[in-house]
Amino acid sequence: MVLVLLGLFFYLGSANAKVELNQKKVDYEEIVDEIDSMESERADLEDLLEEEEEKLVSKEDEVTEMMTLVDSKKEIEEELSDLSDELESTESELEDSQASLAEKEKELEGLENATVQKEEDNEPEKVKEEEEEKPKEKTKEKAKEESESSETVSQQNAVGAAEDYLSFMAFSKTGLIEQLEFDGFDNEEAAYAVDQIDVNWKEQAVDSADDYLSFMDFSRSGLIEQLEFDGFSNEEASYGADGVGL
Image 1 (cartoon, one colour):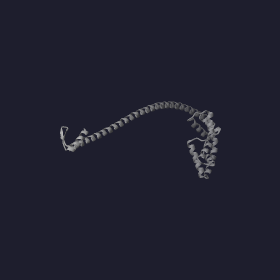
Image 2: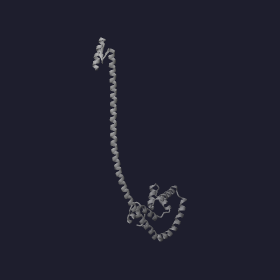
Image 3: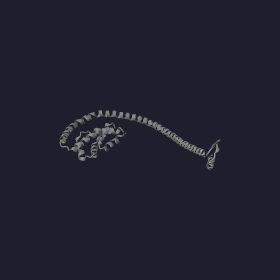
Image 4: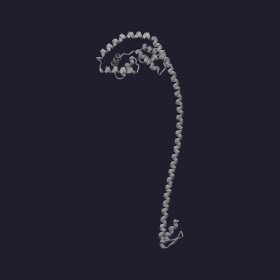
């Protein structure tokens, strides 16, 4: 159609004549207007086609996004399934742990009863030991009062640190000295501090033995060896094992 119009265009332009187009008589200018109109319509159609192509690309992107969401949903469902399996396994382990804890509590209760009985049996011996230690304690308190007046600041700090440690943890004498040395006090200051505090090292051995048995099982000989490794003497370690019923 465009070629026909172009032919007419050249014809009319040269002959200044009119021809019949779409059952109308048209001249040169009218054909030019018609060509411009058709070009405009073609441009509009091209723009419309471009818009439709852009919409199609957008739809394809939406479809791709939806497929990605579907894949993500599948992955999430698989992860949830795995988490559900892990939760069931954890609950089973928790039930086993609770049963084990109940057994440990029964064993601990038996040890406590045995310890109480042992203490009742050893009560006369303890009374005798306390009576023998009273004069020693008085002498030690007097020596402590005399030494406090000449203490250095570092010695006072060492004494305070030793008392702090014994307020929440059991120590042997050598173990406490080593701990103070680890904190930066020299051997003389650490030994001085331990000598200034009032400690029953046998009772410390009992407390230490009790701490060990709260989280680990020991035979009597194994517990004594562990306490000796911590710096308690054999006598103190044996006393500690007796104190917890082993």
